[in-house]
Length: 78
Image (cartoon, rainbow, N blue to C red; front, side, top):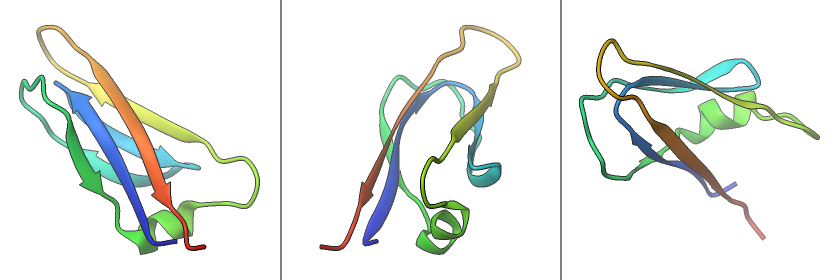
């Protein structure tokens, strides 16, 4: 695996889990822009399983509108 990254757009605090293991925590104030976060390969690889994997998100904000969207990109070696 060469690289793993998440594209995020959110206005809330988020924790992202892969198969129950936290792989990213972000605290955020209001933003309407996408950001790309490269994931540490050792953390991502340890959480990754053969077969089916589950990506889960815990998002929370204490006031105002709330939104969250993300995309996962994984570049693998040929």
